[in-house]
Amino acid sequence: MEEYVPALYATAWAVLPPLIAIVLALITKEVYSSLFLGVLTGAILYAGADFDGIINHLLQDGLIASLSDGWNVGILIFLVILGIIVALMNLSGGSKAFGGWALKRVKTRVAAEIATVLLGVIIFVDDYFNCLTVGSVMKPVTDEFRVSRAKLAYIIDATAAPVCIIAPVSSWAAAVSSFAGEGQGISLFIKCIPYNFYALFTLVMMFALIFMKFDYATMAKFEMNAVEKGDLFTVQDENATRADAADTGSDQGTVLDLLFPVIVLVVSCVLGMVYTGGFFSGAGFVTAFSDSDASVGLSMGGLVALVIIIIYYMIRRTISFRDIMGCVPEGMKAMASPILVLTLAWSLKAMTDSLGLADYVSGLVEGMKGAAVGIIPAVLFLIACILAFASGTSWGTFGILIPLGLAITESHPELSTPIIAACMAGAVYGDHCSPISDTTIMASAGANCNHVSHVSTQLPYATTVAVCAAISYLIAGFVSSPIIPLFVGIVLLIGTLFFLRSREGSYIVSEESNRNRSAEI
Image (cartoon, rainbow, N blue to C red; front, side):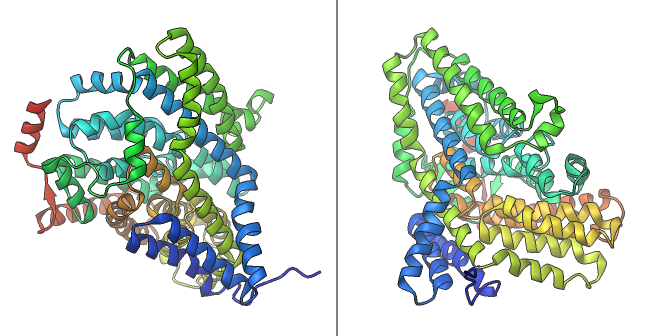
């Protein structure tokens, strides 16, 4: 029996399902129905007028397949474990104790934001782990200095994928290595770091915004409400309010009750990932990380860490065993919303896969091989941005564009590094700001922020950086060093921020606001 191929396969129609989901989410500010309608649109385009075919494709190939995929299940298990650990840290009073400890040392709003950025940079092993851990640890501190939850979510998200993509020891380095040709692996990843303009400019963007003490576009409204009215949310979210209410914990906790679980989790996750890559069977550490299965490794490391953390809290006796077990359903409930969004996002990707979105994009890339050689990195960057934003997956974009990039470099070896880096950077842009990206969803969950609020406030920031990165890739195609495009891009970004700061509609946090808040504390 021949495999069914829809009439609209590998055409521009394949872009319609994610486009509908994204536009509806931004208009209605409701993500569940928007994603579901995107999935339903994909099923209709796939099956046509066949009602049975639509339902079967929607359920069997979409929702059920997403929840039965081994990789996805491993990620869901890891998220549930993270939710339980976060609930334990909160109940033990560890998060509250750390907040109190930090507030004695963090005296300004700028310092609170910088501390959040630095913690996000330190936790570079995996973007999921980064999002939920940084949010849990830093929420009490940023709340005290009236940093809006939307700004916190942006900082969390901007130190997740953009940091992981320039960290050689991370799940992302492993993913990129797996898509590269044999024998290239991690060495190709390291060569691309100076050319990963989007990730590097994102870090510059965060520090510049913090030290310039201003925000623009949609974020300006959220920050103004937080600083002047004490409204951290602007758009209220029932799930966020419920999660915040569950964050109250014991007064007997210590800073160690937070640091110990975090350290154990980091070490366990790293060991879990290198274990799946064969480290304990003789493979080198870097090789093991390159060959690791992030889904299995993270869930394995998380489970081991959870057991150790439970034993630690039982020894500490700050919370009873009954209360510890009560954190299991609480942690699962806290993750219910992101798990639902992730399931729908994965189902949407299944729809675009069945409609041949990857083949459609591959055709576009193949058709531009004869273009002017110097613009290839910039063109690939823009294609990667669009594909990752529409599909919500950076790793899927890696799988589509990196092999094509390698094929192009066979005839243009002098552009091999900027071409592959452009594929990676464009994919990170999409992962960073797409409403259906799992990392974007996790950043919202980590900050207890309304998801659409996070997307709408982050998109102008990420796009500003992407425009500067695109210009740098255009330059990189004609020079042999990353230094010139890096310098031009950073100067352009800083100049753009100064221009936006002077425009009407931007919000500048005054020194008086800072002093008043410091006095209250």
